[in-house]
Length: 366
Image 1 (cartoon, rainbow, N blue to C red):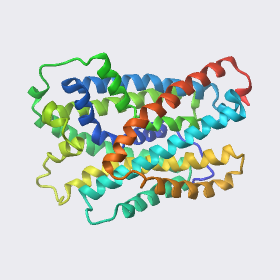
Image 2 (spheres, helix red, strand yellow):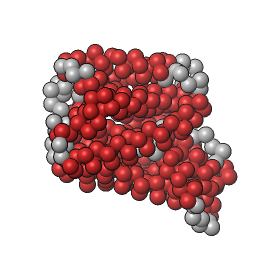
Image 3 (spheres, helix red, strand yellow):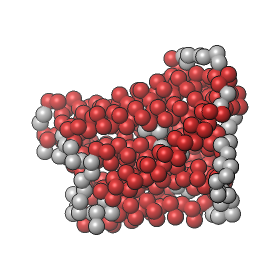
Image 4 (cartoon, rainbow, N blue to C red):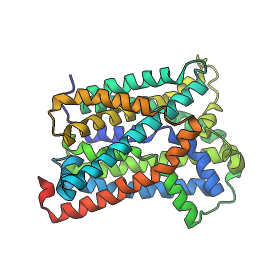
């Protein structure tokens, strides 16, 4: 139904980016930032959000100048076939890494919080089945689904955060502290995982209805993501204080569990809270699978009909790779170690080089 219509609006793009960025990292991030910068953790989150909102302009500038192609066309035109292939293989590795770690971490969280007797592999298969069905239908399906899910996620989340804000004790934040330069640098590295969805901008421009206006839309979406994450870090600090917060495993989820739904027919509050991340992870994994399969088709210069075959390959690869980490802790630390390396390359260096080349014109326009 949707596979033949690959155009989405800027509003749908914004909804996709917001859901793609609201992944499992948000559950761990407040504790990680508290360990790195103490009471200044929310300031670090705010400054990091500003940094990545600005960095989003690099990719949108490339897309604005070369709106007819994807990263495959850009890399071949800029780096040539051989070095372009190396850059594209690295991008495929990043997609696989992000997808398999997101899947493993979310499955482990669901297993621990909701379904302790259910095997992790069974949870992973269900999540992948949902994400794969979205990916199989194409970009428009993902865009429409994100547009619907955004309101189903944003409104309950806003209500819960408002309740947390009313009940929090803000003396734990005082006295206000400013982070050091090293703390800001470490915080940016940790925060980089939140903006994992920006990688999809490498592929999305041929599918946009108005690509010329994408810079403002992506900038607003990235800024809003940074503000939401900053608010969650701020409230976690107000609820727990820096000492307790730094020792929490899933502070964002535990903070929201403190909100009572008295009078509401809700026997499993954790199901409602994890719904935010269920929606986000499903949308993000559908993007990993869809753009991964698209990358395979374009790299090997195959027909669009081969994308479904590549989709099965990516489904199998993400599922199998998700069990390489031994447990949740191993998956989390692996992500923290590798995220900065891949994000530095594909959110800063590669877009900057592509932008320089696109500015000169030439064979990148092929």
